[in-house]
Amino acid sequence: MEKEPIKVKLSTVILIIAIIVIIAIGVIIGIIYKERITNNNKVTNVENGMLEENSIANTENNFSETEIKEVLQNYLNLIGAYQGEPYGVLQEMKNITRKNVINDEYPEAIEYGKGSILPTNIKYSEFKEFMLNYMTEELFNADFASGYIDKNGDLYCKNYGATGIKYEVKNIEKINNSAIKYNGKIITIFEEDAKEEWDIIFEIARKNNKCVISSITFPSEIQNDVEEKDSTNTSKSESSKQKSSNKNTQNTSKDNTQTTSNDSKNNIKNKILGKWKANKVVDSNGTDLGLSDVWGTGITYSNEMEFKENGVLSYAIGITASSDDGAYTINGNTIKYGIPTDIKGKMDWNTFTYIPEEDILKEEKNDFGEKKIITYIRVD
Image 1 (cartoon, rainbow, N blue to C red):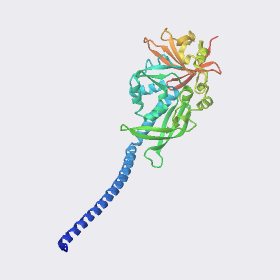
Image 2 (image 1 turned 180 degrees about the horizontal axis):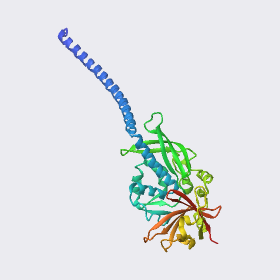
Image 3 (image 1 turned 180 degrees about the vertical axis):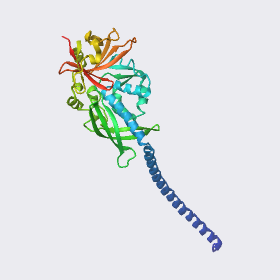
Image 4 (image 1 turned 90 degrees about the vertical axis):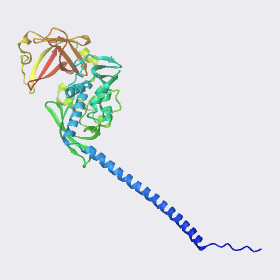
């Protein structure tokens, strides 16, 4: 038997073809849509990246010049104090916050490890929080952290130091219209009559909605003795490394009162033990003023002090306010001494500089704006 041919209606064929065409068109549309979505995402990501960069730039750049100069000045005040001694930063903190962060102004040192530390009245976390008002945490860790100890949550300062440096911000200027990089011109004050002008480079950042210093580079001529005072610190940032080798040469060329020495603390202590007396008072021009210019006629009755063991100072120059013993501490060639006042337990703190080459002590006083330099000699 012959099979009858299958008859397909034309309408069915057309319907099948239409379905195939619709499917094909759907696949093509899907491919095109997917490619378009991918391309749009790429464009969006690029645009978002540009917007993010612009947002960062605008965020960093919306600080006024006055705000930037102010935070730079505060940072320089802190680093200048630190270049003298870690404890000096606490005095700057006290000046800014008006809080009693200093323990008895200059407390007795506590033996710690291979050196000694000085106690304060605040927690380490409070001190760090204060410092981060003016710098990033990275800069704090690089330039300051090595001078402080977190002991059971309390802040202690490492007990070393010398003469600090003061800085004044003169002006700042953006580098190539950057939002964060600046040139700065500052005045470096080694002492009242030794001022020099230097250029620095620094960067700012926004942290907790505040303008802070994120990096700073001093010229190689501006040096400090922080690393010399703390030989355990070998991980300074680049900015610290550029400030750490030859300050002694500059100081020696300016004035013997800036003389520093590699003598150990014990050697200096052994050299200053014993009796001393005031010998000469001169003004900033070297003109002899006479001892009575500082102590009045009382100097004719008493002119002697004695450095004793264990940081005890017996001071009887002029008419003293108290008969109690004073105190002294040694940081390098700097002797910080306290004379008792009429208020029990209070000390009037001042500073001597020991000049080993001449075996003398020198002290600078500012008497109503007039600089007076006092020399003390050993009593045989």
